[in-house]
Length: 555
Image (tube, rainbow, N blue to C red; front, side):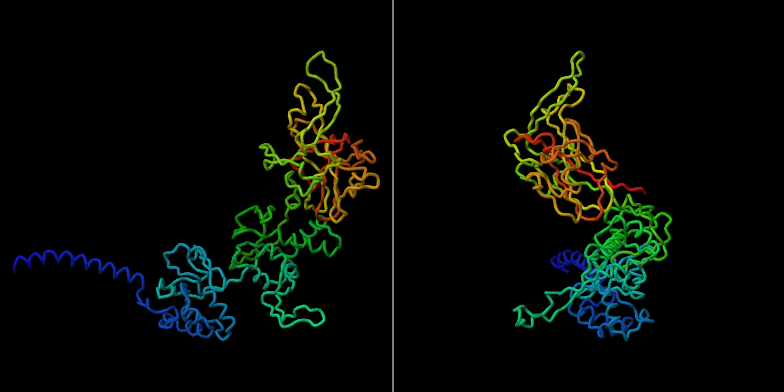
């Protein structure tokens, strides 16, 4: 051997070793990719047809038309049941088999190394498939041969048929004896699907388009709480009918409407909605859970008779849950900055205040004139009568009697105590040198009850008087506070002077501090000035952080 040959051998041998090593690694990686069956060039349908243990599945794919999906589609995971898994299934029922197979084909390709596979995945028919860590199953089925890679996806061979789970609404629809199902189902209304309906001509008499109409169901409960939506995950609790009646009878007086039928429907709606919870929750592990509407629902010592994991969550059937009225009928907060109208919004300022609820309050730019007897803290000085004119903005003054700022709130048919926080924090309006603050914060609150004629200006005695107040033109709720003091003020009824509607004397009859709302619905409130003065540009200031209506609940 000459020197050149020796040199070439020395140079080539290491390269050959490296080449063989890389080739071995590459082949190992490729084998991991394509799997033992070397089916990488086949599509999903072809690969399934080549597996003897999947022959039943292959024939059913052809029978239902899903063979075309697996031949042409890209990036699927097929949870393929073995032949023995189909024992006991009526494979002659094509519609039923089609539903089953639609749940066995998963959108996207997942190997057993993919963490998402062990959470939840979605099948082509929209059904969710959940992994159970305890049993190591996918809706009851285990993988027996994993990660068969083919040209357009992955096959996972299963020991059983992955169960096609009902969604929550489908489950309820198969358990029709429960009052919750009966009521929710009664809300189904047929409406025209304008996108799917076909125009077939024109009505000669009216000129309107005629349609070959396609109808679809709409349901107000399922719109708000989409228990039938595969993309929404909820836990829904069904109470036995006796437990439903318990809450129905407790709630009914608080959801009174204009007719018994409407009252009945609204009450049932509220019982049904109280058992909707976001996400999948194990109610057996909690004494209390908060539902999607913020109501605390007790589960301590309840009897669970059934539970079912659905394709979009979970359903429990229990004996009862005695929800407390104070959890259901809650105080109603109305933020000052959330006003819905005003005599002239130009004069209403929303202020940023760190001390305020929501860090905002509102104030009316106007003037006020008051005279008050005050006591000085310095010894030896006598009481003195102080007259004071003060403004929020003397250059921008609202000049309208009974200037109003409007608020609306959804209320129940209940008795309410009325409070607000109206903090006059303008330093010029009070003097800390006195033991009592001389300048009052006095404001009127007129109200129009749900279903009643709206508030308006123009009474029989004055064009600027507020009409249609629930207690008449000469009585309204009044708040009495003090400048410089931030406090929760309880409002009560006061008599008003005729024509001017200036605040006169407190109403002393029992219940003067209670707002009685006979019908559930929207309450309209006008916060008004002109309490102590009706002089031009001196009708009074308005402040509001928030109003709170506190229901009187005995339970």
